[in-house]
Length: 128
Image (cartoon, rainbow, N blue to C red; front, side, top):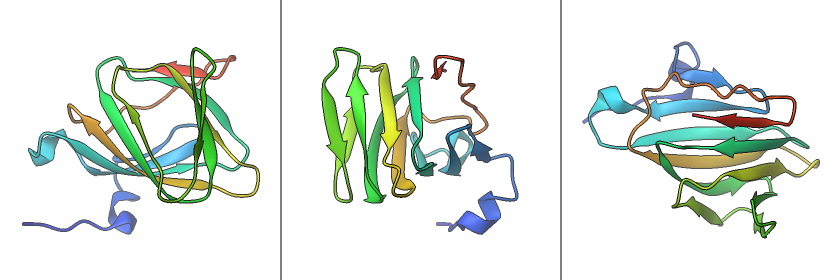
């Protein structure tokens, strides 16, 4: 058994600023659990096109609000108590409302190494 604090992750390579937000990689591949858990902050008013080619992701919203849009144009509202699941390596847009940051608990399978970083292009897209 072990514990880990956000403040400790912030002092490590497992704290990632990905341009339109931050990710505290609380549990990574090196922990041997078979999945990753992150505390993800999506900055207020931001839009990011994201695509995980090697990982499935589920995100549970604990604060703030926004939306996720798939590439067919279907938009899903995200607010506290909502989980969205990218179960087919879905290319998607993630948007936080302008009123405030959106806070998510993100789970990845297979686990992240922990230092992966989005590099948002001019069109806002990033994949890894």
